[in-house]
Length: 287
Image 1: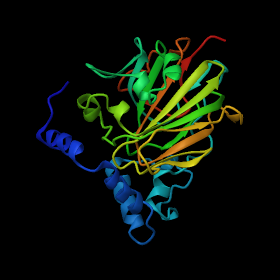
Image 2: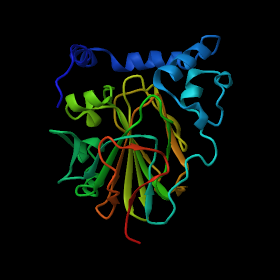
Image 3: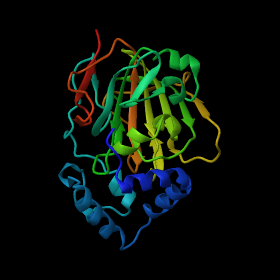
């Protein structure tokens, strides 16, 4: 691991001390304000982070009434083709691969020298965790400039959703390298699906300033009130979502962790640091 800068050391200490959820509630409020301040906020953000508005369905900044409408903007139709083939996995989002590979005896690689367990990531559900103990994982970080809607890698049937309360540490590259078990400590939404490739989980990880996470089937889930794990059973309702369809979105950016069984293989280029786009092929499995 690279040695931290003085600024990063200060921020690391600050992240442990500040009230994560209070800060995020302020961000939630500000990003939903309407008025003359919205256009300057968006203009500054586009310039600072190099956002490519040519990809957006509505490329004119004046179109957006709140910062959150801009941040969760839709893409132009057809600009992210979805990988063809019944035995291919499509990338669920735009971003950068943080880590990807095999799950080793229930442990997931977070960064060099740091791991966390599938069991704690999934909120302590032993039956669910056992299905992925020797499976595959891919962790994808969404930067501020990215498209922030999330899509299905495969045709899938939603079985369960678990909301796991927690902290809201930053998920920037250097914090992922420095803060132990970060993804298993942050607030997150665990979505469990049945697919033709077997069981699959998409974990939507919250982070500082990620003021809300929502899904297409339940609307906004985070932030709820309370500190207990909440479970939602969809096994009797047949909530089927097609490959490439939107399944949720981050209101402000964060990380998606995709878990599959050991029959799935990632493509050779799906490695740490690789930029990816929603819809591109990231893996395959036997017919």
